[in-house]
Amino acid sequence: MSTVYLNGQYLPKDQARISPDDRGFLLSDGIYEVTGFYEGVPLALDRHMARMRSGLNELRIDFDSSGVEEIHHRLIAENGLQSAETSLVYLQITRGVAPRTHYFPTEPVEPTVYAFAKAWSRPSPEAWNKGFTAITVPDRRWLRVDIKTISLLPNVMAFQDARDAGADDAILVRDGVAIEGAHQNFWAVFGDTAVTHPISNLILPGISRGLVMGIAAEKGIAIKERAIMAEELATADEAFFTGTTGEVRPCVEIDGRPIGDGRVGPITRALSQGFRETIARAQEKAAERAEAAGV
Ligand SMILES: Cc1ncc(COP(=O)(O)O)c(C=O)c1O
Image (cartoon, rainbow, N blue to C red; front, side, top):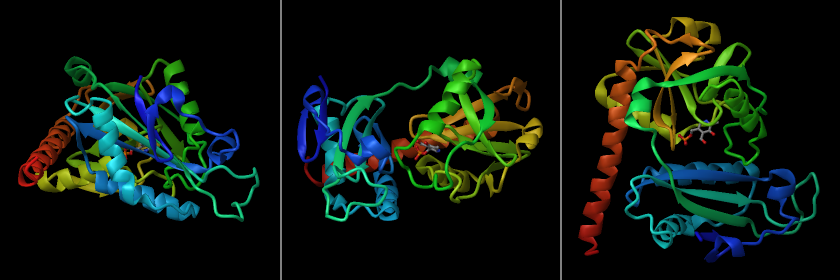
């Protein structure tokens, strides 16, 4: 039985109880974060915490988040995941238990804070090297998807559409623009330039997207942030997704048509390699800090 965190307590998952009056349950009134851990070391936890705080501010959820990093580390430890190659912590903060009104509660409410940790697996090297497929589907989401809210039904429906079509992923298209994936950011490569949608209210500012921007700069790979028209995908040389558990994930076929020569391309490979190097650096830094602290 895994150990989860709920409102100040660490407890077996089957003992965690949430009120039916929780505004997360009734109204999707809350946010979440997912942070990747590699042999117990978080990747860019500070960036995930900054995005979490920004979401809380946007939704005016009053919450002292100073202890949240510690919850992450403790859940990894409590669940024996320090040596797991790849694991994650899922954190959800809702406005809390309050009457079901379409306005915010007028009395102060304690937010509900729930978190769990689990291992996840990368695709096999064979599957990664073969690449993944996607279909385009209409983006049926609201206009503030920059906030990482728990309201994910349009994303779930898009991903289900992909599964129903036998594809690995969905690319959400709004007004002819390939915005992002159902749970990852989307990139296409034209010539020597990797292109992704600019930060706006229409995409989630992915932490992996940000890391990949830095990796590209280090490796001298040109990046452009601009709208990618779905029509343009026919002329793309490569395509890939970025996300916390997807890392850098090659996309070699969209709507049944191969991207470029239908094989994983050199820019995708270089950025994926850089992603692994970033993880290794985070692990080295954590080891140095532990040594300095005499742990
Ligand atoms: C819609 C969407 N875009 C992009 C991402 C990737 O974000 P990150 O790199 O922070 O995992 C996610 C992750 O859940 C997502 O749901």
